[in-house]
Length: 383
Image 1 (cartoon, rainbow, N blue to C red):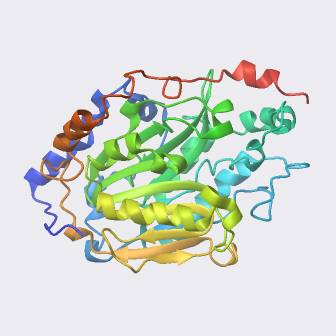
Image 2: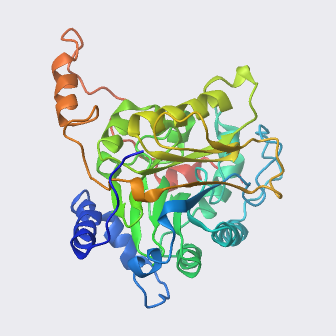
């Protein structure tokens, strides 16, 4: 972990306020618009009033591993016949998990990928037309979360009422698209991060629209720098380099599901691969990694520690809905970059200079922004 002590002098507070809002200058000010849409009842206290009550030398964070409401089990079951999603009930369950995490002294809690309303396991298949779209896409759209809605405001209020940072991952619906979204809500209800997965993976890209690179950012908080990425983004050097250059202290990684260990046939979906990615991220980024996923959830200390907290997929969801880890947050440097680090502007220049000359300088189709319009998605439904 980093060794500088965190200070709460007024100069540091002012610096943190300025830095935490620097990302508003990026993109289309999405997070500012999100705050404008959010309705909440504050407790007339600032985030610093709240954090000053916490023991930062023993800061606890929590990762959700429980299932959303009506999410089909067992873990690897991709048959959605008879499944009806229930966003309202899942939001209520999410609020209860936030309460439970806070009751166990957690100050940060993170959710699995698109946990609201639930990851559509059946979408990943090679059939044409895709039967999941034919029979389930309409229900999925209608159960996706709208920013500023009553359900959204309930989740924000849960962060306020329980005085906890909440890392959401949800299928977001706006007027024209669905997105694989993440949001970080502060204990005072301010939305610090609102982002969309840069490029959904495989058939995910047939349902959700791409995000943009300006939505890859970390924010400074009184407990340290926090950033968020979603599932396959952890395998994308473009994404991880941008994020890790911003020197996170706590990284929230949202994964849809992480099964039991020992199933080699799952390849990139296996617990071995997913947890390895989390461990490598903790080493390269020198950040605590909160790896939330239905089934196996893990929290890795920053750096090269061989000890971490984990609850595996074979454990009861009812008995162990969350996994916890405590650490000393006063050791965080809370700096926003490191010019002398491995992941820095200088390193980026080296990548550019060392990129093989024989490779054509073409953007290619993969990185081109891709969208799926809601009316096109509805057209695929046969029900």
